Length: 333
Image (cartoon, rainbow, N blue to C red; front, top):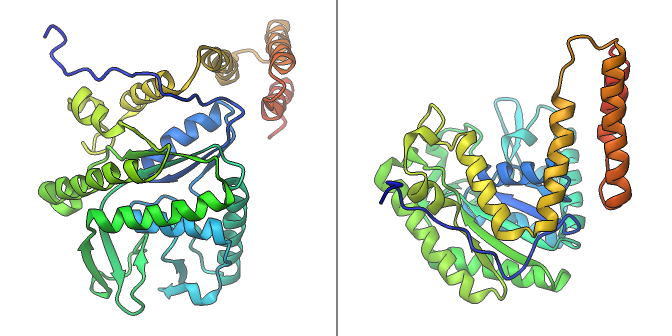
């Protein structure tokens, strides 16, 4: 009891994730945190082709679209206050130009569909079990886009509905990518708009659903992000000022847990080397036009060159471009 906390210890998974494994991330904002971290460390990733999604039905609908590659049309959009929206997508896809909105939606769909077919892993993070159904069409909204609440019917999914929908789309995915492995997770973010009791009820539904999914989907596993946040990091110092979202310290802690679970020592060594390059590129010299700075730039170039020879599957084009910018401070990337 000297730690005064219940520590959750990582145990290596029965499989490993490497820099040659494409990973598709779909789900809540926590998915974006892990996915963006992996993208920064040069893992091949595709993150939320429909934008951030919270409820399991919208997640299932997105995966279904990635399999069928059915293109979106004007009939799939809704106009509100001069802005075109899709109920299948995050607000980042919305806009005043209908054709541009459809182009961006379908472009992201096509890229995500291509990625799904070559992905080694699908990382799904469920946010909550609450849904909003647009009463005019009966469609479940991934995002209500600030359309008045009166136009939606609010309800909470049953575990069976979640499990059945995600199992059904997994069978479709299996037809186009039989080797894909699914990693489930439940978002550690609490959704207090439903009240504390409502949030807990929703999370409980997700846990029951995931428990069933792990039995029904062969090879699927669960990553305990929620438990790490709620039980291991049981302190508000690990939260943002809103006291709801995990802060950078918590995210790094959960990320390290992820690393110890899925990465080999060889992959961790690559990550450490990449972090050296990242820290070097974040350095802002006091005197950029000096011989000392030129030597510093050349050292980084040499280090990258050695990395390229050792790890041919890594692409350092962006870092090289940034180094050219450092060499010519007047140039913009």
